[in-house]
Length: 373
Image (cartoon, rainbow, N blue to C red):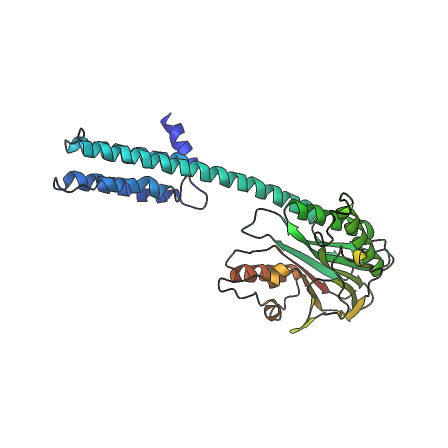
């Protein structure tokens, strides 16, 4: 029984903290007990024992906290016995106070641990949904090397709406989508799945990039509005910013359509060029509602050795403790590695260091390097 109780206590240590921290409350109990017994009669350190369970709450679970509370109460009883004052009102009041405080500390542990288990389950579900929703990008597509990075917001259990996808066409080109659906939680998951499903179903067979954009806008708008009455419909409620790209295998260019999304960055050596477009269209979901029936395609050079960076606003709007935005364009000039995966690892470390590990919004980045055919 004693061994089983010790195993239960061992399991109650909170992750990330060494069980050796138990020496702090244990040392406090032993020190207070010894000093109080050896001190003159007018010196009483027993009330300090209340700190033992209070300290244990910081690094251990309910069982370990209860154990420290029981040891503190036992130490207070021992002090009363050795000093011959166990039956006095003062020592009994101290024992009662220790019991009450220990119970409160254990209750706090139980509530906190239950909430953390719930949050862990929610995050596990969100991560599973994210892994299904954001299928891994192909590492190679024709002459392209591709890598994707998704960083969830640290402070939110809900899944965000950042997304990306790629598809090969029958006419030897690669099409890519990166987007950011409004909101988070189940609504964002649903709308992201809708947009990704429409892209994956049509990207490989649509004859032109504008037709693909019209298809995505129509599918998104129809699905998000089909269950609403005309009186209740709000066209500003559901939308997604996005960039659609078509990269031919044998032509050193990239064709793109921008729908309210931050412009891609083209890195050639250490020269960085934002691919800004004069014809930036409304976000996906707004086009048909405002009578937009076609989309203009912008074409930019994309030669062998060039690197294309697609990203969501979670990257450029990430702030440090002083409120300074992450200097994405300045930092990108220093990333000269040929491997897109290694480049995204550098970006991940640099971005998380800037925000000290706490992103306020989801962030997604896709890196594309053109190689010789």
